[in-house]
Length: 259
Image: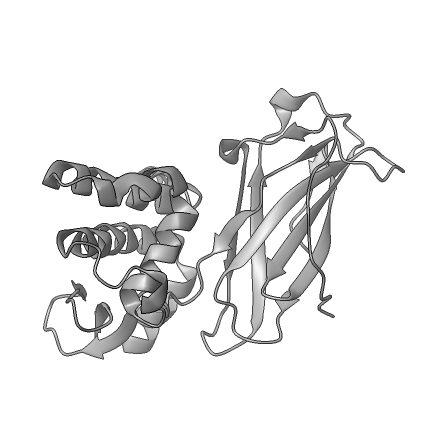
């Protein structure tokens, strides 16, 4: 059952686990369902944690909070239970925690970060479209929410891939993110102020502040096209980094070559 709770973190003298040493992906078998599975991957060898230290995963979506046991540093396992939320999550965030056996204080943790970006409904509309042999197209205009068109042939299969196939996502979403933010920058950041709440540009701006707060805080003071391109590219890279899109693509290609 979901727990409603405000989470704050300031563990004393605990190691912060680098983003490169822990990844998690959440997916659902049906875009209309509220039940998700989470798969984790970690490498904790460089942290000198006791081999019998206990691992657990904190999973947050809106007011829903779950904690799942993952075993020990020496032998972790995937979450055994599925995660069922009250409503369709806009995003799912998670944190790995390391606790000495039989103790309650943390000796290691990851910063809270997303393992699922939701349906991206606040950023773009995903729609079917007859496109012949074109698989997908991204359309971004000033006056309407950006649209990711998927070929209407096998629409349901393509839509499901957008949700659960991280390798396929990695070939689409980084370009969409780059193009959308560049469009915002090239239109002088129209629609990105607090009074513009409800516009698609404002939703994207909030995502930019979440992904790259430092560069986003100063981008409006820069006028060159190169600065705007660099900002959009940085956001695309940051969006992609936690999902390891490139690594997973290469890994899949290597596996196909060796099989």
